[in-house]
Length: 353
Image (cartoon, rainbow, N blue to C red; front, side):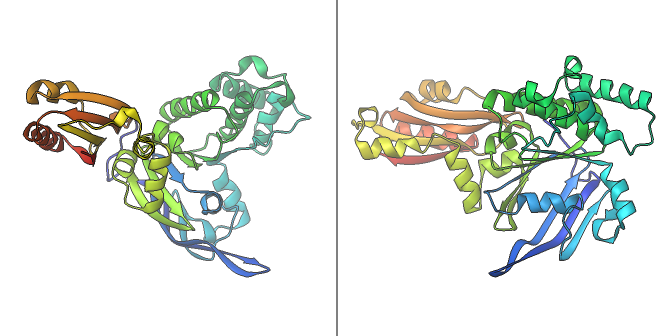
């Protein structure tokens, strides 16, 4: 996972950004007082529900949308102050990929990639060499003469990525680029983006409504709700200790730890109560938890620990998630085990006793 110092240079700086759309029903505020700083080399995720303002935000970054207040600075240049010519030049340093791929069906794979180079000043031979280099980069060297209709969704997105990288951008914007793909293909595309980040030194901004995408690849995340940033920080910190209600909802829907409430409501035998019995939800609250805690507390405190189910992922090199367990022991031993867990950066919630 990408690690950057807090003093890393900001390649994108957004301050008090405001965007208003005029509609038949009056003005609609799409973005309100958005503040974001994205460091050079970040893989930065922006997550929110549909209509939250994610796509509008990213379109303001590359100048496709004019904003109504605040500032957007990319590589030290204020977007709103740029004329058409300077904006075109800036956009060459910003690649962009979309959910719908935006490939031309009447052109081959190689021709689709070459489209991005037509204004580059390169001659035909140099363009062909660059296209071959790009297709090799996205592992499609054998598909140059194929047409989009002959490709899978993942292959189409790889072509779109190759095209976005044609002019050697410093920044790659990904607007829901994996939303139309199946889970396995999504993983392969995210793996490719991570490899390209490491190889080319890209700064990547990922717009998504999928928490799994953020957890897999990003080092920082901002949560956007109704046009405003409600939470921002390192991915592990934000999802391990969510403060905003929307962030908590994302964490809850992506985890099966809440299913224990259904078991309790249904009177499931899995959670049938006995003397000395505690039903607990354990959650990792900080990085650095790597011990075999379940076996340790069982041996040390002389209690039986029954794991009902768990949901643990590795984020930023550390386990994130938790377990639902039953402790069976004396009241003193159960309490001692819980106190120990809390000293090991594990949050413990007693659900039933």
